[in-house]
Image (cartoon, rainbow, N blue to C red):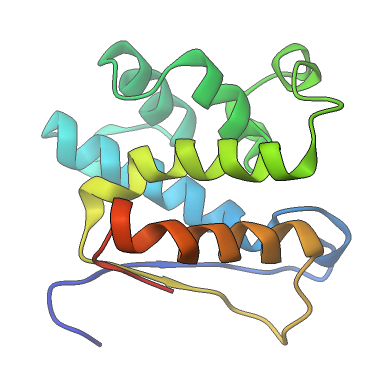
Length: 147
């Protein structure tokens, strides 16, 4: 393990390969908790779950309601169907860019950071697009991010 790095790791179940962004679910959940803990200076155990962490990040103006909907496309527990419906019909490239915009807000404070994707390489197309966009933007926006 590299010293000083925060490590966010994906977790996969047998059903995950049927849904978009599955490798990012555990990563987004853990990132929300760690980001809230770091920026709000509270231990992770003080947060009930990723929802309470996200709501506190919104209250603190670190994230906004649009970020909630966008992150909800990866982590459905943090949003509701009404907010998710606002994202329907978006161009996939625009959606990828928007997801990376929102993720950068919670990943940047966790640097140096390593993202580890588990699995046998069976990653959905949407997730590959997201990984490519993160890799493209990381040197400028999150230079101590390792994928």
